[in-house]
Amino acid sequence: MTPQGREILDAVKLAVIAIVCALFTATLVIGIGGAVLRSDKTPRDTTAAGSSHR
Image 1 (cartoon, one colour):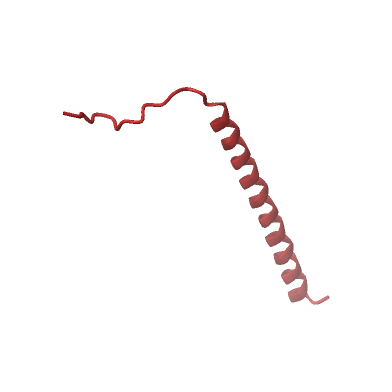
Image 2: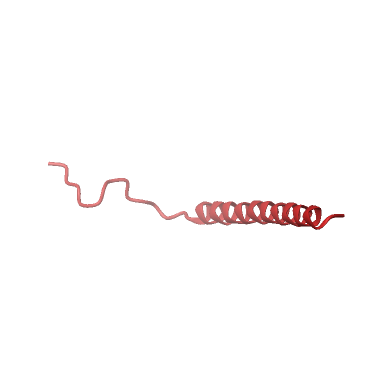
C-alpha cells in the first residue's frame, strides 16, 4: 500500500470513530435529558415572569 493510500485509510478510520462517538454522545445526552424531564414532577408557573393581567 502506498503512503498516500495509508493516509486515506487512516483518515477514513478516524472519520468512522468520530461518527460513532458523536452518535454515542447524542444518544447519551438525549437519554439523560429525557430521564431528567420525566423525573421533573414539579408544577410550573405558566404565566410569564413579571406580567400582570389588569
